[in-house]
Amino acid sequence: MFKYISMHLKSQLEYKSSFILLSVSQILTFLTYCLTFYSLYERFGAVKKFSIYQVMICFSIVQFGESFSEALLRGFDKFSELIKSGKFDLLLIRPQNIYLQVIGSKMELSKITKSFFSILLLIYAIIKLKIYLNPINLLIVLLMLAGSCIIFASIFVLGAALCFKTVEGLEIVNIFVYGTRDFAQYPIGMYNRVIQIFFTYLIPMAIATYFPMLYITGQVTSIWYAVMPLLTLLTLIPSCIIFNCGVKSYKSCGG
Amino acid sequence: MYISVKNLNKTFKIQTKKKGLLNAIKAFIKPKYREVKAVDDISFSINKGEIVGLIGPNGAGKSTTIKMLCGILYPDSGECMVAGLNPFEDRKKYTSKLGVVFGQKSQLWWDIPVIESFELLKNIYKIPEDEYKKTKNDLVEKLDIKKILDVPVRQLSLGQRMRCEIVASLLHNPEILFLDEPTIGLDAISKVQLRQFIKEINKDRKITIILTTHDMTDIEQLAKRVMVIGKGKLLYDGSLKAIKTKFQSSKKLEIIYNSLKEIPNVKSKIIEQDSKRILFEVENNSKETISNIIEKFSKVCQIEDINIYENNIDNIILELYKEYEI
Image (tube, rainbow over all chains, first blue to last red; front, side, top):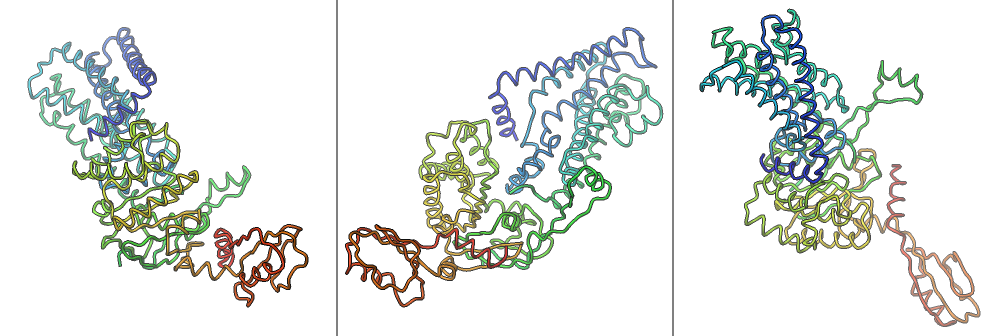
């Protein structure tokens, strides 16, 4: 795995200016996002019962999940390219796990800069909320970060699995990725019932962000809320089953 | 039997579309599918250490057959076993014995030096360090790519890249090698080098090689056994020599001469003639042999040069395809 990462880093560093520009643009988009919701809060104060720093926690966790999984799982995100070029053939003739190889086939490491800034923002919010980072709270935060990545990973793998059938990449997958990112970066307590149910049960981003956030900010006391991010692992199961079926029905392209 | 294939089938659904916007919309709402049998009930077996050439026109089913033998495609029905393994079910075990070169799909990393791709393959195949070094040095020397190991792949010429591809497919010492159009787009020298090398590894390492190609010289020089595939069916399986004698019904004889007064009495058909040369078509089974004709000419004139033309292997294959109506 590390070999893959170092290879991609080497590849991308070959195009030095492109790499730097991409990284800078990542930081800029991130800062614009921050600015938008900061100015909103500046004007309206707290939305419902959530303070700006609570929102910041959800926001940074979702942003981290999106950028980190996009950086490392670009192979699944852009899976249609792998199918269309026929390069998926080459992965099937190697004695290594197919998931690892798809991950290894493409990475977008400049996106990591965004993950880094998300972490900074998360730390800032935690300090401002005066959350004492004892080992338990630290563990919960790490679980939240991991959970957020896993949800995006499930969406990417599912989207990739659909490519076996459609060959062409699906815009609808992007709706889920960006929709999840844009909606779930605010505490879902602000939304109406339908959206709450959607992000709790269908794309359960709330179990990685909102519910554990309530726990560490002391709004709920049940430990159940804190371990919820672990349940995100369940979302990988259907995605992987469908992907495995896809591999079996793979048709291959080109000579 | 090292490779045994029994009644292999693979059908693809292809959407049929007529041209025009209206038809495109119709096809979008209610797509029509047509079934195409890419591989239709193919059976054969291959012994260890053989080189087999797979030929057939474009779209005949060669690549599909190879892809099923590699475990890339799942067959609809039928059985294929290679080295006692089922390529699709025992993929991990099988692929470590398998080397594949797809002429049109690079397995090297485009932006970084070749040697890095080799190192990655070492990790993927978990090749022990000393074994890796030995194989790599041996192959690098044989294919003469030492100088280009540090060059990013995008800066290599096609011939250089193809040599690197072959090394990449052999690093883990496979027992069986699939070459899918290995000489496509190569210049004459690279082709000759590559063929020489393929012969060598087949002999030294006892690697079983299956190659597909459209270059009949590849087949002529490498494969004693040919399989002809057309419209998904295996049409011919046997030696190249047999095809040649079957379709090589005549040879052409050209005699370039000096001071000829009268053309001797020759039964074979004259195709062309001018003051300096004459061209005959000599049937293989005729009583008059080429040496007869030359003898007759040598009596009446001074022969400057003699050329004998065999029917080109490409033409032979063309006739073969015609006979099978593919």
